[in-house]
Image (cartoon, rainbow, N blue to C red; front, side):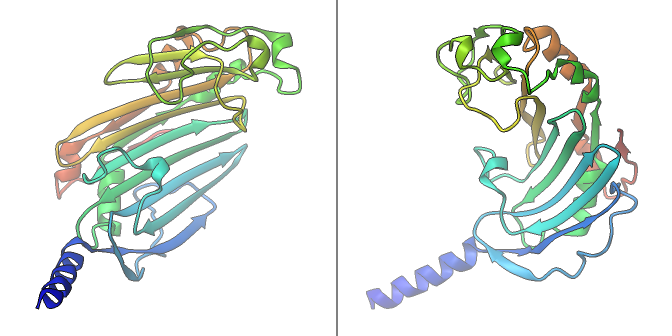
Length: 266
């Protein structure tokens, strides 16, 4: 009898905890997708079961004059893009510039109800997003990677941050491959030091934000800046990064079934 009850419990728990999601491998096109021209090639995705979250993703890539977009529907979200409280539905936005020519933008719509990662909801998230990135103006802070970093410069040294990526103590300049600046909001903390890792990119800018849909909360606005010119990890450059980028999400527009406007700037 106990065994039968156990089997019934497991079956009931599985039925309650499982989630139905659309799942399609990424498809790419050689142009930038906007809300008015998202290709229909993922409208017939199969449905799979997930124990965590459903997601829909758009990635925009630029290399010089070349542009392309990728769209995919998944039954989970990579740990790299998952917030601490992953039980909530959210929109994650990431903008990056990692060389003089290359940049990327990423939109993740993550949700927790059956078949929620569909085309209509992805477009709703897309239309509610206001995304601006003009980081090319900071290319002057990207030095020559063929020259030894210690021959060029020094870095700003300051930290009030408890972030895991911030070194707990200062490192000698001789061990640095670039300067490092990390800024987080809520609470506002700054880490300006030598990086504790040897990133593949010595010159890069990223800014990331989570927007939690149920409680309409913006959280974890995080900026990372790696550069190789003199004192480039300055607070003045952090302020420039904020001024050169916009990551905003209109919750009212997302929840309005009649919303149709869209703002996405180069």
